[in-house]
Image 1: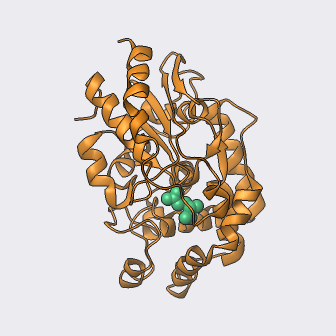
Image 2: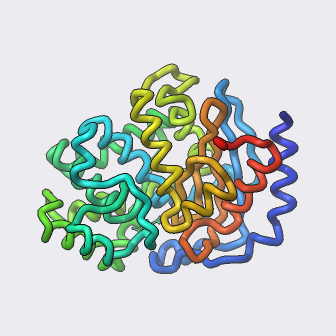
Length: 307
Ligand code: GLN
């Protein structure tokens, strides 16, 4: 298949959509990002990369980082992790408090904010220190990406903390139900820091390749998680990766994927490739408007989908 031609076509077709939607403005540092930008990259099994648009420009990966922390926590805790966080789609916005109250402080899944904060908390309990935990997360991302330069943006993390009341409230609510073990402020700050990791689409697609190949990176041949756990992570990406638009995303795109409010989406085609797309303007669910459409075009043009 001529992937470059397909990406070039998508790039042309997507232009009228780039200004539609709204950049995330509840994190002031993200509100400054200009609309109208677009990038898309694919990484194949043999390491070949195809890109279009601003694929060297780094952006805030935000909730896509929840995939990495889920991988780490599932590897450490196995089934015990599910005592603290579920695996069902929430059908609610990513930062919703109501469901958490009804369901006794157990977040529906690892990809809504409450679930990801609970996972960060579980990692801090395991590593016994927030800074050590952040270092483990960063080192893991550098290893799966084979890129020692990856880092996070302190300014974005602090900007988010200045307006972090809702996430702090989610953490406190979990604590009131006994589903929280560490210092709330420090844990939420660690969560904000991993959300503030910056990557470009080439780096992001490279980082997800191991999940397209049963947990084993086909380039370095390193197994980062066993096949059965990789299957579960991909399943949760499919059912929960786009919050209350996960059904719609599966319907139109048909791939396990995770979005972030920075406008990025990472998707995998099992046994074939990993894909990353970025366009900062979001739809009403907080997922990249043009990014979602670009992935829909990609699976339609190539016929590559899990269905
Ligand atoms: N850091 C963001 C938040 O907590 C992540 C949300 C997202 O990307 N959907 O609100």
